[in-house]
Image 1 (tube, one colour):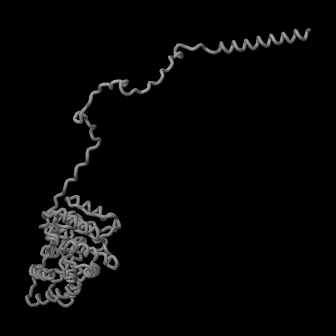
Image 2 (image 1 turned 180 degrees about the horizontal axis):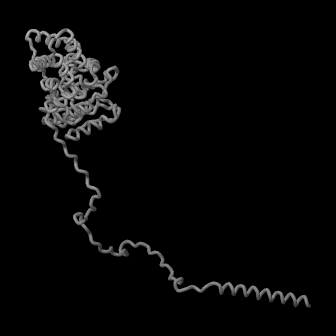
Image 3 (image 1 turned 120 degrees about the vertical axis):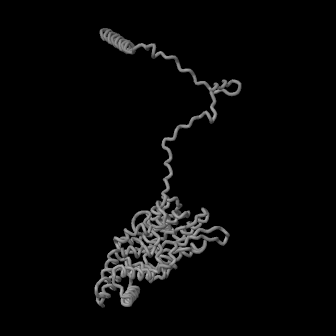
Length: 396
C-alpha cells in the first residue's frame, strides 16, 4: 500500500513539473508587436489583355529635334598645318657658305700651290696629290693637272686672281656645266588613255640617306607646284614607312605603304596606281636599301623597276650616294648602274666632307650627272646641283 502511494506521488510531481516547463516556455515568447503584425502580402496580379486591359498612361512624346545629344567629351584633333617648303631655286647659293666651310681645304690648297713663285715638277705633283685626296679620281686629276700646267706655261699666269679664274674654268670643265641636271617630272599618258604621273625611283645602299632624300625631294617638288604621292617600298626596315609618311604629311603628300616585310614591287605598283587615281603629278618610290654585294637583293630592285613599268616608263632613277664614303661610293654606283639605268645622282652629306671631288669622279664613272646635293640636316637643305655655285664654294 505504501508503495502504491509513493508511485502516485511521484507521478503527480512529474506531471506538475512538465506543466510548469510548458508555461515557462510560452511566457518567454514576446507577443507580436504592431510592426510585426503586417498585413499579408497581396496576391500577384495577373496581366490582363483585351477589354480588361487598363488604358496606357499618357506620356509626353518627343521628336528627334527635341532630343539634345550629350556634348562630345573630347573634340577631334585639328588637322596638322601644312608646311610651305622653301622654293628650290637659289638654295645652292644660299647654302654656299656652309659648303665652303667644309670644302675650303681643297680650294685653298690648290690656290696656295699655284701661287708659288716657281711651279716645278714637285709642285705639280703636290697639286695632283691634293686633287686625289679630294677624291677627284685618277683620270680627271691627270687631265686637270695637264690642262692647268699647259695653260700656266703658255699664258704665263701668275697673279692670284688670274690663277683663281683659270682654276675655276678647269674645274667647271670637269663638272660639265652644260649638262642637263633637271629632275624630269613630266607625266605621260597610259595605254588606256589615262593621264599618268611621272615616276621617280630612289635607290641606294643602307645608310646613304635614301628615305630622307625622298622626303626632301617631295618638298622640292611641292615647292615647285607639283602634287606628290609617296611609295614606301622599303618594307624591310620597320621605321622607313613611318618616316616617309611623316615627311609626306608635312606637305600634304599621300603615302602608300604595305605590310612590314611585304613585297616591295607590289607597294611600288600600288603607289603608281594611286598616283593615277589621284591625278598626281609625281610618284616618288623609296626602294629598300640594298647592299651592292647581295645579288638577290639587287635582282629584287630590278623587279621593282619592271613592275612599275607596267604602268608606263620610269622617268628618273636617282642613285643616292653618301659623299663621305669617297671612292667606295663609286663601287656602289657601278653595281647599281648594272641593275637599273641610273639617270641621276643625289649626293648627300656633301657639307660634311672635304672630299668634294667625288662629284667629278662619280659623274665620270657613271656618265650621268649629279642632280641633287644634300648640304645639311634641315628639311629644305636638299638643293639642285649648280656647278658654278659649287666651284665658287670650293674656291671661296
